[in-house]
Length: 252
Ligand SMILES: [Zn+2]
Image (cartoon, rainbow, N blue to C red):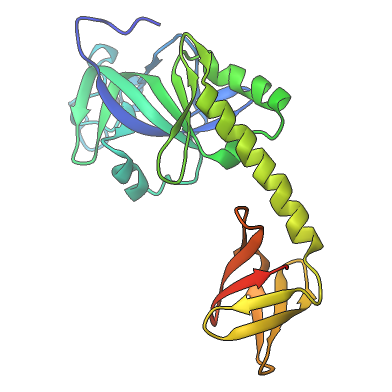
C-alpha cells in the first residue's frame, strides 16, 4: 500500500462492519487490503449535480466542493458519536488524501485507507482459532489493531511484529473472567445471603434467568436485574445496583 509520501495525509475517524470477509463501509462498500478506497460520484456519472445542472465535475476532481461525493470521515471520535455510529461496528483512524474537502465535523476525501482499528471486546470471537481466522482479514490491511478498554485501548496487533503480549494477556484475562462469572451466576441460588448497602442483610428468594429476588430482614422484597449483578473477582463477591439502591450479594 503506497500512500503518496509527498503529502502528509489527513487522519479521520470511521466505522466499519467487520466479518470474516473483511471490512465494509456501513453502506456495504468493501474495503480491500493494499488498495486505497477511491471515491466515486453518481452525480458525475449522471452528468449533473442535483440543483446545479451546469456544475458537472469529472472524476479527476473528486470530491467536488459543491457535491456530496467522497469517502467520509469524522474529525474525531466525539464527532463519530454525534453521527450515531457508536456500537455499529469497529471504528478506527483512516488516512485521507488526494482532494480532501473539509466540513465542520468531518472530511470528504478522494482516497482513504485504514491507519488503525479499534475492536470492542464483544466483537472479538471467543476462541483463539476463531480469532486467528477473523483477524487475518484485518491484519491484511497492515494497520495497527487495538482492543478497546474502559479507560484505555490495548495494543493487540502491531503491524510488522504481530500479536502484542499485552493484547493477548488482556484477551486471555477477559475470557477467564467470563468463565468464572458465568459459573458464579449459574450457581447463584435460593438462600444465598445478600448485603444490601444501607438496608441490611437479605436472602435470595428466587434466582431467575433475568431477575434475582431478595428479601430483606424487614421482609422488604427487592428485585435486581441479573445483568446488574457484577462479580467482583477480587473477593468473589457480587455487587449490583438495584432499583432501590445498591446491593452486595454475599456468598459466604
Ligand atoms: Zn460528486
